[in-house]
Each structure stands twice: as C-alpha cells, then as structure tokens.
Amino acid sequence: MSNMKRTGFAYFFALIGGLFGLHHLYLGRTQHALLWFTTFGGFGIGILYEILFSIKKYVREANHDNVILEEYEKKMREQKSPAFELIRFCGQYLTALFYGVITYYAFPDTWLKQTIPSLFIGFSSAFAIALGTQLAGTLGPRRCSFIWPLLGALLGLPFIMWNVDASPSFNIVAFFSCCIFEWKVDWNPEYFPIKTESEASSKKKARTRRHFIKRCCILGLGAFIFGTILTSAIYQNLQVDINGERVKVKDVLADFFKSQEFIQLYQQLSSVMKQLYAFYLHYGFKGIWTEIWTALESQSDKQAYEVN
Image: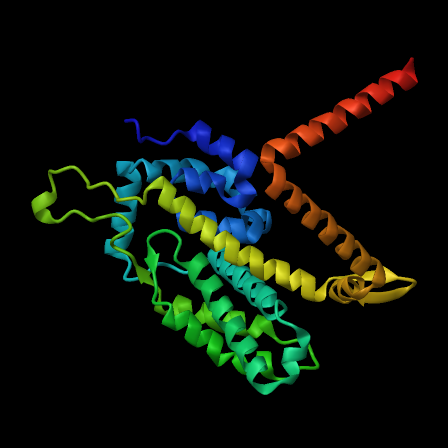
C-alpha cells in the first residue's frame, strides 16, 4: 500500500508544476512528463484538460485499478488496433510541428546556403518531427515503430528544403508523419499485462515501473537536450529594436564582445583574478577570508563613525 498513488498529491503536483509534467513524474509516467516538459503542459491546453478530466484516471492506472485494466483488455480484444482519436492526433501534430520548428531554427541561418549543412538541418528537423509524433502518439497502451513516423517526415522533407529563401512547410511534414503513424499504430500488450486462461483466477501482475531516480535522469537528459535546442533557436533568431532597426541579439552580443569596453573589462577582471590566485597561493583560503573579514569590519566601523 505504500506505493499507492494519491489523487490529492497528483492534483497538488499538477497545480504547482503541471506545465512541466511534475504530476506525471509522480505517477511514474516518464514519457508523459517529458512530453509535458517540452511542450509546456501541452501548450497550456493539455494540462488544463487533465486537471478537469484525466488525473483521476491516471491515478487509477498508476494503482493498477482492476476496472481500468479490464477496460483496456476489452478494447484490445474487440479492436484490432487503437481507434483514431482526433484530440490525440491534434496533439501529435502540434508537438511534431513545434519540435520541427525549433530544431530547424536552432542552426545558424548561414548553414542554409550551404549544401551539406542545409541537408543536415533538413534531416534533423524531420527527425525532430517524427520524434514529436512518436512521443505524443505512443502515450498509453499504444505502440508504433519509430521508422514509420520518420518515414512520413522524410517523405515531406522536400517541403522543408524546397526554398531556403522562403519559410519551410513544416505543416505538411508533420501531417505526413502523423498520418503514417496512425496507419501503423498498434496496441501495446506490455502496457498492461493481459491474463491468460491459466491465470484467470490469479491477481493481475503490476506493471513494472522505472525507479524514481532513473525516471528523473531520463527526464533530466531530455530536458537538457530540449533546453539546448530551444535556447539555440532563441539565440539565433531573437531580435531587438535599436534606433528603429531590427537587429538579431546574436549580432548585438557579437559586437559587444568585440567592443573596447568589454575588452578592457575582461582585462581588468583577468588581472584581479590573477592577483587573487597569487594571494591564495601565498596565504591560502584562511588568508583570503581574514582579508575579507578585515575589510568588512573596516567598512562597518567607517559607516558607524559617519552616523555618529
């Protein structure tokens, strides 16, 4: 009973960190947590829908509720493959589109004018689109080989590479990827083990879950990769207004780091650090701390004298 998940805790985590999938991490839904983290709670709409309608069901799944398990088993027996869900399809499409866009724009725009780098950007974007399709599409008892959404994205690759001077058509690529995924999606019998006839009277086996620390590591790695790509996309494309002219932030920063003011500041800081290091070699940490403490006492005495 100690491993039972509580509905109250699930709602609490959803309210304080639902945009980043904290409640899914609590419930052992690592894939869903990663999806929510990288789409900011399903673009804000998904987390709202979950709070209103889905969290209780997720808790029952996490606790291996017999009614929920039997419902899934019944669907698997009666339907050859999962039924088409418009809401899920829209979620897949938006996720794939978002992943593709930030990946495409995470690279320097000068690469688009070179053959090999532009091909690399195109294939990377197609891979990201397929990953978004796969991640959103295989939530729950559904499975599909990653080859199929990737194939769909690659079929749409010409629409990304069509014209480097115009905006690429990510919409078409994401649509192709999602459609082929839906065509090949199947039930995942390992999501909830189905009883055989010899096990009809036995208790249902609990679905094994990754250790909490391992789940955190997986989520952390995914978040790091996503954060790197998103940061690069912002850095490469964010613009600011300077004297009525739109200038990219990366160009502003490049000019700043080349300016005389920055060079002088860097030289001064380097000189201070060298002096501090030399002082440390001679007096150690104790000497540094004593020097800082003496300076603080002197400053305090000076302020007290001025007040009096």
